[in-house]
Length: 184
Image: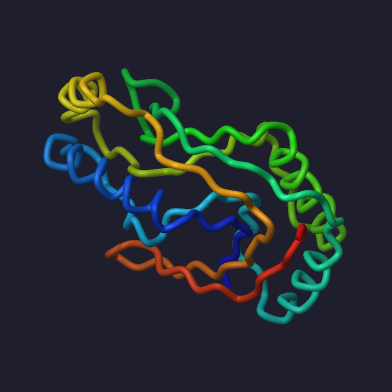
């Protein structure tokens, strides 16, 4: 099975992202847009794992140390790696070192299971689209420059989730397998 660990986002933020995508999708012809109900904050992509290891993963995630709730703001947007040759369109996340530390603790807990550590620095974001070509990016930039708000809401994270991801031709289907509270 294909697994990842993530934080959910509030429905209010999901609605704002749905509205943004509705404005951009007609002109962003080179992009494949993420289904709004599947948008989440990835903490750790585990990848393919044998079904027999699922219980071990859940036990290791249950050992993530308790901490304070993490305030999160969803603001601004951009393109990875850049807007001239985009691969991803995203909304930014402001959360400070606490979110980076949580992602690091999850990595540390999963390392004894021989789940590879991420080599890149953790950069939290919400993926809205992936690009097949840059067709329509200039038109997207014009719309983005005209927006009066770059604020998509906020949240107070107290739990993370283990998800299974099943890839389909219509997009990924996510199933929540477990929830782990890390704060009150």
